[in-house]
Image (cartoon, rainbow, N blue to C red; front, side, top):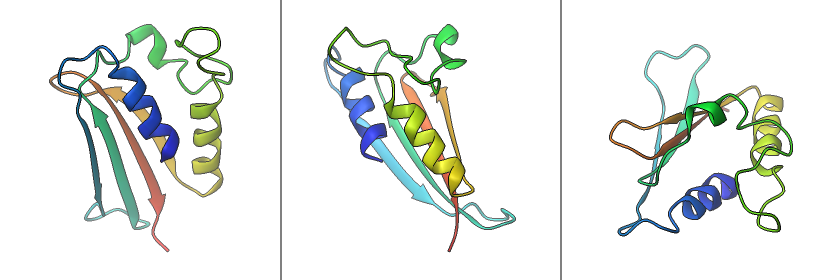
Length: 105
């Protein structure tokens, strides 16, 4: 979660009125039952060519010295190891949206 939030805040550095939304819920008929957390921002979004690589180790769009390109890769691995999923997309109306789903305990 920390990584998703930090990336959202980083994407908002040049936005006039930056906003980040975090939503949590339990999708109705999921089998097995899951918990979904969505982190969305009103930044510039994710260029389509980056969407395919966003979870690759060492992939970063940040300047040298500002990011290692490991945060989303590590987050993705942790979520997968716990039987969940982490996806990225551009939100309707602009900005980026990350959806984290984990099995309910």
